[in-house]
Image 1 (cartoon, chains in turn yellow, purple, red, green):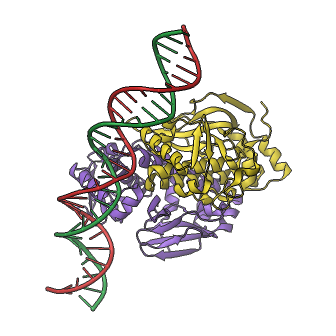
Image 2 (image 1 turned 135 degrees about the vertical axis):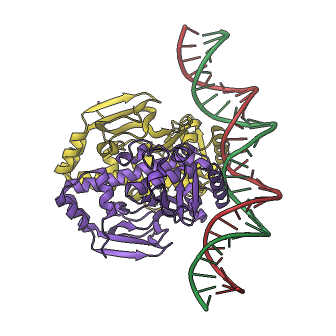
Length: 261
Length: 261
DNA sequence: GCCGAACATTAACTTAGGTTATCACAGTCG
DNA sequence: CGACTGTGATAACCTAAGTTAATGTTCGGC
């Protein structure tokens, strides 16, 4: 399966520049790709993975179940994310990864990754950097869950979601694909579905977003960012300041979104 | 400043075995150590660090401030933790690190760490592993904040705190030094001080813990672990199963704690 | 032994968010 | 085509946790 311009490359390039040689090395990382439907597990808690994975398209998430059966999503995995680096060094998965939307996943054997660490320090640096980047996102989620209201949390998650997709060029003007149910938003924000719904109504009422048919449209970026206290800094190089989706606030002018109507 | 048996060594050894040679390399990492009082910043959000740091003794935490002035602690840093690995690859600190108790911090220049990556892949692996380990803890905190009640959260934090200190041999029977105020517990668990106090009273009432004069004593490990849904798995190799503090449940018998009276 | 500062504790009251339940709607499977 | 299922939207009600404020308690400094 050919996937044209690889989203991983787009992302890693945003974090660190590569030579032609290194880019070839990067694209040769994986040999096997897998297609998965929505709501399927990629790796499960307790597994002993022998490969790392890379999301090529779709949407996935890390999640854990509590002893009393509640679910908490700890991270979204967007195209370009290498999402099992920890399996390389830590033995047993302490959480699961599952798809949200139908997805394509590339498998990278551990040996390949280890060999590359030797062959190209720059590439291995990039992979390492990727995992530090993810840790920064984890920290931000802790802040989100610990110190923000429902309304703020959801606004924040939406900003981050948009920003991360923008990093890999997967936005369409001020819109992103949003293949999530409200239950999944609830599991990501530590809220109940009902209250997620209430808060989304509020965000709509403020004219900050439109959300329908699997598409999130940010009508007022700076308003949403303010509502969610979103400052893109933790997303590092990818987003210099407060990450406006376009050049200015009234940005839709020159760009066809083609589906926001 | 000589620090006897280095807690970092104890911890890294628990994660990965080293040769004599490598252990020498590890202890030569730092040249400069700094002493800090309680409640002092080590690095601040926005800083561009040139060294990584290693906590030799004391207690510190990562924290972030929200736009409206609330504080969230995102991680505790216990002796043996290297806590600025991200500064090696990410440019600007997106959060701060501050002490809780008086602490000794060793500074490791970035160049040293980079050079070591070349000299000893095993050592650099260990450092990398350390950061993946931390990410696992971040994930667990997300679950804690998102899906557990106040009572459960605090119980969980206490279990983790004990377990991580046990990893570096800094427990005393069923007791650990607990130099935290209730405000700090609140900032770590995303609660208000008042409610933290209420929940601690409840934990005391259940006979699970004693907490006074800077010492936390776990009177009933399995009870506390159950209350906090604590399963040490995410702490990896260090804790095989559910991490009982001693061999069994009634473990205090043969071991003098010397301060729990 | 007194003073002030920082913490811990408790009570009274408020509120954000959880729970339960119902209805509407769209997709899909027989 | 109707039954079923998953999802979204609301309403009514309830509770865990927040807020404010007052009262102890401990401890270092003098």
